Length: 136
Image (cartoon, rainbow, N blue to C red; front, side, top):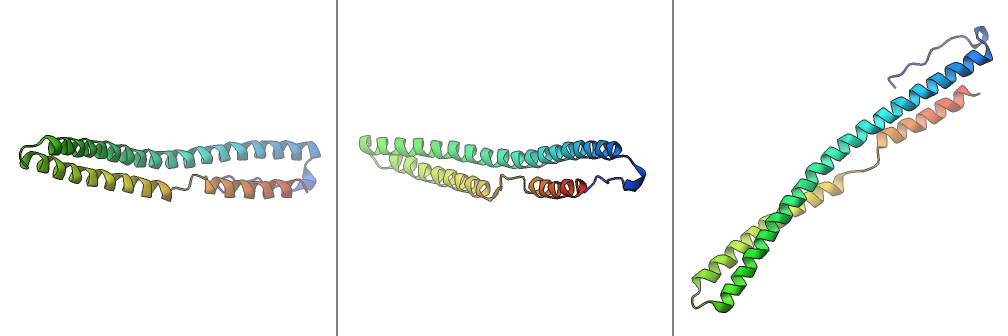
């Protein structure tokens, strides 16, 4: 832990001084924990933002692929020859496959993220134990 507690002899200090130090140290500790939680959550939010961008890009590309497939089917029904609808259908399938791969990658990365600020939780447990020890 970055914060060092002052080690002085309790016999030399009054009870009021000891409680004053405990209050000040506890307030400092709480501020440090809030800062740690903010940092940890900011890091996770940044990663989530990047992965959501992959999802959005994948969704847009998949949408474009679906539009092309639909046009391919429309041309298939109305076609007098094969070349126009075959082209649209093949392009649509390729675009849809690329979009699907992007969506899959984004979802896979999002599943790896643990939203709980583990470091802060562990630090808070240590702080709780420290506070118990200080009041004994």
